[in-house]
Length: 147
Image 1 (cartoon, helix red, strand yellow):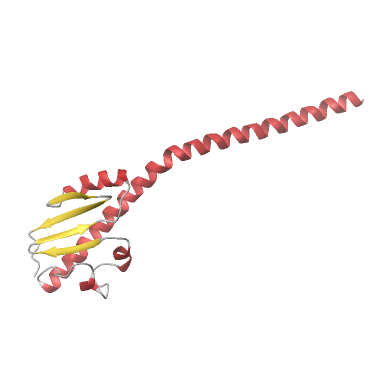
Image 2 (cartoon, rainbow, N blue to C red):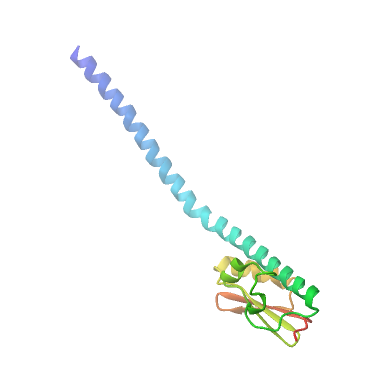
């Protein structure tokens, strides 16, 4: 009788060990997938965020132009101290603005390598030029009259 109980208890222990082993293997597989997939997903989300922010900044500048018939002359965001045209959080994220003659230059926040390349291609479609500035991009918009 003791042998039967011992055999059953060993069998139950073995089943528990199998479950633990399966959970460990599952955890390793999920962890590996996370390490492979997450960087690409994050880079794609970052790229979409920067595209959206760029569009928002351009809309703010165009609204300023509609109201004042010229683009702001100041460098930086001093011309929009009331955050009427561009949201304060965009300014605080590292976007920079400068205007000279008839050229506006927008500088992006620091970008990761994948976002840097994707955004350089995307911004080139509607800008006069896009140049590397370390981990940032300088986006040049010509024919935008500054006072």
